Image 1 (cartoon, rainbow over the protein chains, first blue to last red):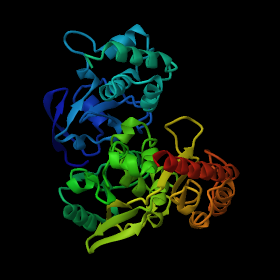
Image 2 (image 1 turned 60 degrees about the vertical axis):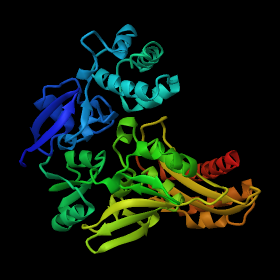
Image 3 (image 1 turned 45 degrees about the vertical axis):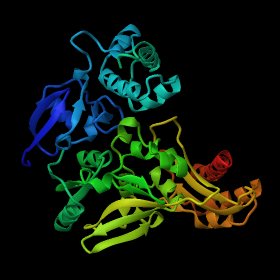
Image 4 (image 1 turned 180 degrees about the horizontal axis):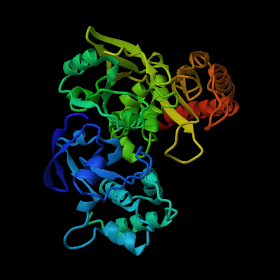
Length: 160
Length: 290
């Protein structure tokens, strides 16, 4: 076992300090040490996107990032998406369109779709499908997810 | 995951001295999208990861008569760069299909090269664009053409105490453009069955090839520069026949294997199809921007 490293970071707007081993992925740190279990472990090799978080405003697979790399960065997880006033428009649209069944992939889809709408507030269907290609869902067949994201884009421009 | 130490190097000198001290037990970490998975799956043993992302020069991408891409610059910054979009379109083609957007946020073009996969998407584009690698070790720096950098699957020309600092791409000639494409059985998120990059320079009336560079991925142990296929085109008219001759010459140098992604025979066939499309794609871009 290697020495634990002290890491200082921002997560969902809060200043967070933690100790981790270099071999721990950011996903492991979030889930096992910080009790932020929203990001899910699917493939653990960068294919499925269930562990997607935002690092410095970019969507990242947290299974392919080390916890020690978070030093000094600004991180957002699914836990920071809804506000005290209610769900984020994307979350609301996922509910309305029944864009989930088992829900394992949903946090990753919401995070990556949010990243899309922040950089491209009115994407085409093709742009949505290509952007979300790094997120796998074995339940919905994707169509409902794509509809939910397109609907959130139409309605939520001012909020996103 | 196996235990290892981690250092975020603050300078090139520090990174090199760590490599010099730890030799093969140290590995450079940039985006980590290949490396972290390899370490987790015990496909690679490491004692030390040297993170170079926090060293400013490894993150710089700029054009000043030639394009300089620091080894850690992630894919999204490559395809989002206006000079790259304007002058090096094959790089946009290739970096925008490496993994999904989450991978592109971290995966670097330098890492794609150092990982030395025969099927790496950025490497044929870099070869077609005449890119060279700037390598630094304890005794100074040296330059290696990208087509000479990979020496086998996962193997490179780097010694254990050297690292890739940046890639340098020369200014493209007037009336030139480039193109990269691959064949995969899906629409995205897959590994190339075959990939082909091409850059083409035409005469000012667009009727004659002045020069061309064709590079092939996933048809040999390393990405290949199809030198003869490239040279055949110089001075030839822009016609179906000349392009077909180059495609056949490209097929001649392909030495594919059969594996789960495709048979050797299919890959040979694809080299012909994709070389033609890559050349025609580059030619169309020249005509569009004229």
